[in-house]
Length: 193
Image (cartoon, rainbow, N blue to C red; front, side, top):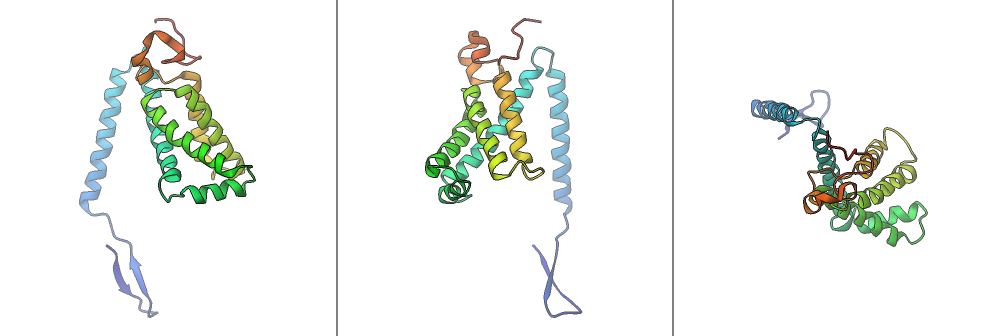
């Protein structure tokens, strides 16, 4: 909670920013230690056979959560919500803005779910890459640092398209014999090392 402090030079009230108490500092330290030891365990478990698959899993989880959140906000919530998002699409000059707004929002929501599960990864990577390219080029005018998140998500979509979902994916679990079509992308060697 903020404390109100009367200003000596004026009658208005100023608000003092609360300081972190010890429990917040300890919580942050505990989270840092957990992250450190988790990374150490992953580093020990990571061999030249599966290290890339762990990296793909991390990319899929992070991008999946982000895309689900953004798609949900457009489709089902008020952040920004479909009316506002459709208005933004119309302002960018797209024909049939309702169609394009729903296509982008559904691509984000369903694509995020697909990335998270590791299924249909290459198809949705293309769709999500297009959405991010349009967002960065049309809405953000290729501006950096304003377009940093769009550029980063575009790069992740390209990487997932090229490499596939990896072996820690639903697609690989369901059909491991399909190689690059399901578990590994075009840029992953199929040779056993």
